[in-house]
Length: 194
Image (cartoon, rainbow, N blue to C red; front, side, top):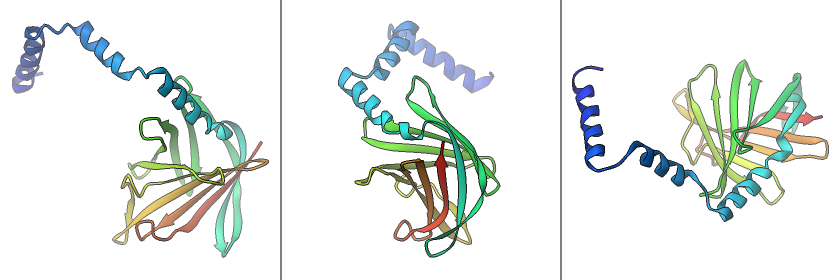
């Protein structure tokens, strides 16, 4: 480090020492801020448990729309949703349309909603989806609220994803909107079975 950056770090360190704040106290304050009270912890665990229908190893068939309520298979593969980081998240790596996606699902206990983060190997976009379970028991999330989208031909495209538990496993529907979520068109459907 050189010049102003080094000088700035010295000033911050000096200010903390003058204020009588020890490094251990700073670390303790961060740890205390991240600890949830017991009721919130129970709510977090219950919210996260609603995602368990996705956990584990699956045979998945990917389908693309060919017309009104008609689908064509584009092949089968394996997919695994792993529980990570103290069982607070579900994660997977999935491929679709030549893209590879890293996907993380979680429950935001403070806002009482589900969040999905998706990143791919081509666009550099960290896509954020938010939503809740609907009355049918399906998790419905979109990136309209968070505002992440991609642009093609000058049009902003958003996505909506619906994860629906079924007797054999679950289905994952991805839809696209070019009008800010006013209307949706199916893009891909994944059917998962053990």
